[in-house]
Image (cartoon, rainbow, N blue to C red; front, side, top):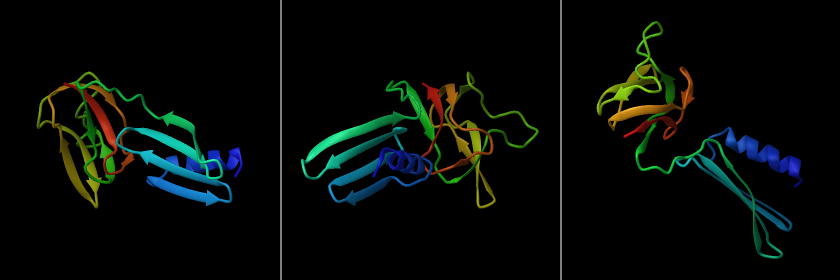
Length: 147
């Protein structure tokens, strides 16, 4: 497996919901794990003949704030993200908006049902990680709220 094949593999896995892939060739074993909750990907390559583990690269899609004051709102279901209750209405929240626990912050449509997502924390919206009408996966980070 050459570098071009490895890059294509990593890009393909990055764009899917696959979380783990193991590939073994003659003297090469590649194990790829995508950590969805932490928003980072880590890849490692192991040569079985030397039993030496070598980390190929770590790619961070978004800078993960390890600050306990930041709460990450995650999608509870797979569906389509809507920032507003209707196409002509104002967004539920914007960056800088103050939110209270239980306040509606977005809608996720799943199987033609509009599911209103409420904030589980009070605070200020510091970042919205998805665009209106994006398809979101279960557990995908939607926005960050500073408590």
